[in-house]
Image (cartoon, rainbow, N blue to C red; front, side, top):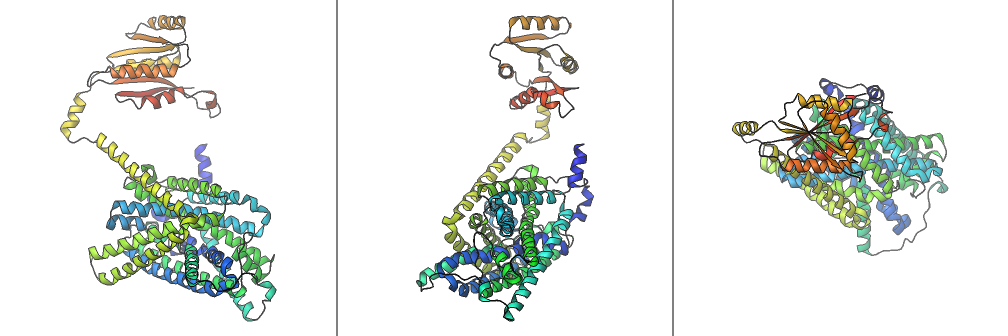
Length: 616
């Protein structure tokens, strides 16, 4: 029944040989890996204006387009740099692999931690922005923004658990529809403005103090606005991280997707920003800049207004899909190096890294509810993490070309060297301008991720050293120490489950067999002793009496004391009968005492614990 339910919701289980069929071509790679960057144009311009307008008022629009132009130039440089990363590291991993390979594993962990933080925030911010687009069209839903964002995350998690191919089709078509919708609005808005069809009442008029402000203050304001607008660059790293998810030749397909992504972002970001300037759109807490722009172009409440809002909700929601495509793969790479739990390396029934998908679902959901579904509170945490990875990736590539040389290495090193300086400068600007607004939280969380990853690595190293056998001789010596050991069988009453366990123990050839009971009265112990003696078997019966109802504690104490008395090379075995209830409804009627005792005794060094199941 469970398998049928899973197959219904997640699709049939795939074989390993079907992995190549699950990978993306260019057509479906664009919406999966570019949706984050494309969607950011719907709020990047708004973030710039939210910094400028309270200070400059209507004069903000004279500064707005130059800032947009600077961000687009930065995007072009990053795309050119990441094309070289894809070429040099076709196995994927992006900044983590590049930094680890060229700058050392510890620096690689900084890049990896930054990317993990960035992808979690991508899902949280995108879902919250999608919820904001919903509440812009339906203001009555504003109190439920966090719940709407959570439902968006649930939908994306379900789609991605269905597998790579299903998610690409499910989420790909809406991405192309959003691109078409935005291009239509841009063309329509420019045509209407050119024909003088926009009256002053349609443009948002801002009353603010437009007086001169100090030059230093103006520079700081512009840098702050630029730092806020750099959220448009999140997602550029995604393609280089996910190269293995493309069909062969994967690097060529990844490069084409990267160029297409840059093209769409430049056209839509520039077009939407131009319309915002022409129509003098001012965002507010009640409505986003894109929703006000759609109302100005098509008319508030018109069919195309709602179409634009719906498609904006869709693309903002699907932006999180980039993280669902990339983060599980990145975490699998890091886990393969021993810095994250090994379970993240395993592929699920649909050949996806389902454990990584579920981790992303849980972390993003927590952020959504902690920040009450408000993307403006989350955005200050956002760009700092991604620019740490940008900087380390470019620095790593610069080191790579200098170390590896190869054809035209001077030119390639110069490109990535320039990228290093540029991304480093932007990183400093973002951290300084956003530190008190929340960037310190992101940096603290990145440090926490790195600390956890180092602890996980230490654990795996310690386990590996403990399990390692240096030679065949040592293995033979360890094997030769094995002697028939003692077995303890806990017994509470004479029943079929106990008899089955006893039969199993008698067939194992233990040197000593002890039946141990914890009784509440002496009379109960003597009665059980007579029943065991009547069986006529060679064993000892040991019991303790307690009136404190702490049966499990007494049993554990006895096993621990017996283990301490073991001679060298001896082993103590504890065999317990386990009642197996097949009905899922009847399971709740039985306690899990045997399971809890096993978990406790598993920590005892020279004690082997196992159960003999009795099915009813």
